[in-house]
Length: 206
Image (cartoon, rainbow, N blue to C red; front, side, top):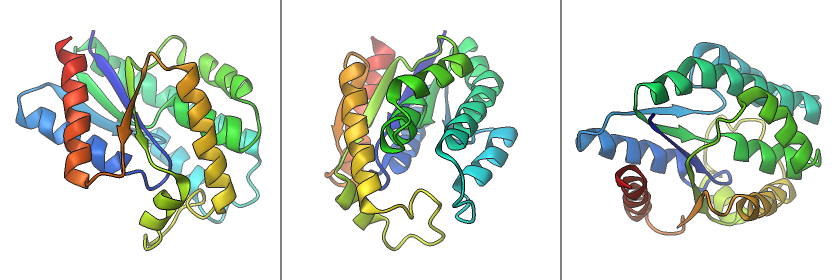
């Protein structure tokens, strides 16, 4: 069995940069690893991603949003993550279930437990071995992406929503504190990637 390691954090935390950076370092050092992301990672899930994040879909109901994420996650899991784990690979995944708990469960007000139940049906017992949480407050994160072109539907939410996402993550961290590794994402890009890589190596090498 391989190693399932996820990266989480609010928008602008740098988790995509850190996760891809760690993946590249793993390859450079001879580790058998794959990189993937949510929503997306495989064709069907990427199609669902476009629907979820399209700025035109402002009328999307919160439960519809949660269900679409869970559907995307299920296909991604069975088509890409599980096969890679069965081959003994290190799976580096940008976002997984914790995002749904923080964004839809807490920030959208659906309830963390309710959203967990939807995702439990989708993923069964496949939770990450460890999750690296890139810790940065909502305002700092949004300031970082302020110049981003083609902002998606969630990027365009108000600061209050992103503050709620951050608060939701704190609750998720408390729920899964044995799985969570907190990374200070206020450091430089190189420092954050290095800190994350060192944590991943500890996990892989036991």
